Image (cartoon, rainbow, N blue to C red; front, side, top):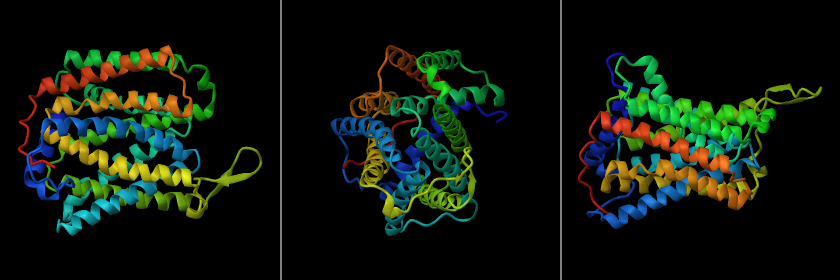
Amino acid sequence: MTGMNIFDFHKTIVQSSADSLKKLSVFNPFTIHKKGTRTKALFALAAVCFLWGTTWIASKEGVRHMPALQLAGIRQLTAGLIYVAFFLYKGAPLPKGREWIPVLVLCFLNFIMSNGLSTWGVKYISAGLGAIMGAIFPLWIVIIGLFSSSEKIPTKAILGLLLGFAGVCVIFYDHMADFMNPDFRLGIILSLIATWTWAFATIYTKKQAASFNPYFSLGLQMLISGTLLLLLTKTGSQVMISDGHGGTQSMIPYVSFSSIPWESWAAIGFLVLFGSLTAFVCYLYALQNLPTGQASIYAYVNPMVAVLFGWLLFGEKITIYITIGGLITLLGVYLVNKAFKAAVPPPEQPETEGM
């Protein structure tokens, strides 16, 4: 990334989204027809904060009753089919030639690795902790920038990085005994890898020119990743390995669709309908009609929603350590994001149409 300011990534993503909204409004799933209002946009943003926060709860409930990677595969395949069917119905062309490269790369980084592993991770850790872990990916972007960019890292970003990891240390202090549990360690490792791959995906997105409809690309990424995850789990289930107790077990868990209980189907339905479709459309609407900084507050509210509902529904503990540590971590992420935006002025908000 020599000669490339890593802190431009936020501008690039938002600007490409803004340009796409102008050029590709016919493909916007909202099917917008008239100018939106601030009240509607704030309501949409509130929906995003709530729905994306509760997806951690739905994932946690779903993986309690079925293999995590299989759940992620079904979710992504279903949502991807809906997105792709919509765009094909609208007459959107498929990618051509090299346009497939970013689709496939982001399919791997964003959905197979990041979404797949974070879903797997919450099988072993609390939904609230998983959400907090998922929110720290901007910290990894700063670390990557320290080693890969010749540009000076803003002081505010360094401070945010230190605060973020201090908050994580406070949270982990409350879980010192849990680290003796190999399942808990696995959940933390999976969640960390998920945030790393999301950070790399963000940087990769920054480097790519927006030559193809990003919304259609998202649907294709979901469709391809869901198909691959289901093929992986089905194939892996037929490979037997030692269970460490003299017996054997499948390398990757898999259950027949008829064996999936209604609780998991309900969780998948919620994740597809509200997490992958409704919340994303609401986010696009909020992004079109609110300042970018205001629209991005969902990243700080989502973990709080997950922690609260994890406590209400699953009895997950809300201790002084996770409260203070979580707030310190989110403050660090906030400072990092502020550094991104201070490094490059935010783009002008696009002219959009309302619901």
